[in-house]
Image (cartoon, rainbow, N blue to C red; front, top):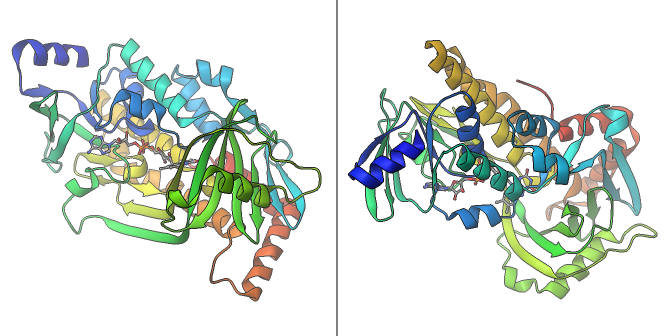
Length: 407
Ligand SMILES: Cc1cc2nc3c(=O)[nH]c(=O)nc-3n(C[C@H](O)[C@H](O)[C@H](O)COP(=O)(O)OP(=O)(O)OC[C@H]3O[C@@H](n4cnc5c(N)ncnc54)[C@H](O)[C@@H]3O)c2cc1C
């Protein structure tokens, strides 16, 4: 047990510690994996380079698919989510001076999305793990994975100034796009599929009540804007900006004036403004590493794939990966069945590529590309109108947005 491990480390000065699954990274993927494994009686240790405070305050995703909500609720960490999460039954596309609602309740009956901040999911998971007596080791450094292709992989790390080693049956690389897990796999094993977009997203968190009940995806000549929300008092906005844009070029007044220019494009809509709590620029990219496994090292979440945020899929994919990995590890611990572990990468990649396509498609549908000529712009408008008017096209958007069940 993790608590016992900590006790052993503290009391006896052990340097090598035994656990069943060593997890690198305490983002949604790593924390949820540890939680789901714990429910199956499988021991794990989570190693995180940042502080607990940092990971609990990190503002990122906020749109949870139905399947993600179901997973969190069924595993006992959905109490606050059900109380505070905002269930949405549609989104709005805004272009050509008009609103076009994608009505989930009509197009995909019984399915919806829930708006609940990623940092709230992280807080709920950390609380559940600590309550269950698990310890997540924050502020570790020098994390290295060795022997991934052996039956006893090891993770070396430094914690509170001491060099330690985790001796594991399996390692889960849940350390995001910039982590070390992918690099622990020898060159030539992984194949990378990548796409960099010629723009970035400027994300803004502001203390202001939403100006709309639902998310607004707005496509304009000035570029794309998204009106989202986190709570009834806090909103999240995004602006398409130049790639590698310097945030210093975006004082709050400019942010609000540009958001107004891109969102106040339909009669009767006024964007409410308020104090900016946080803002930053994030690259927009598509990335997949295949396969998501090497020996006994399994990659999950952003460590294996990144999607443009337009489709709101990143966090949901991370949840799906660890759900699949939990089932596979449980089957192995129950009776040595390796079939689900062997299928892990292929199972996850089916959903990953569906999400990649949908995220790329939504991005192309709503953004302004610098190299678009008049012909391209007319094609884009024609497609936007098709999605707004055709029941079949709108249903395709809706079923992808709320999340397809593929595994
Ligand atoms: C600015 C931003 C905005 C986003 N907005 C959205 C959105 O609106 N909708 C959406 O669906 N998705 C969004 N995403 C994507 C979504 O947040 C990610 O897909 C999600 O966080 C993936 O979870 P994860 O656990 O795989 O990775 P992460 O959340 O990145 O967690 C990885 C963890 O590993 C830790 N770590 C890194 N290296 C090491 C190491 N060497 N050792 C130990 N720990 C390490 C990190 O500190 C981190 O805590 C956004 C991402 C960013 C960056």
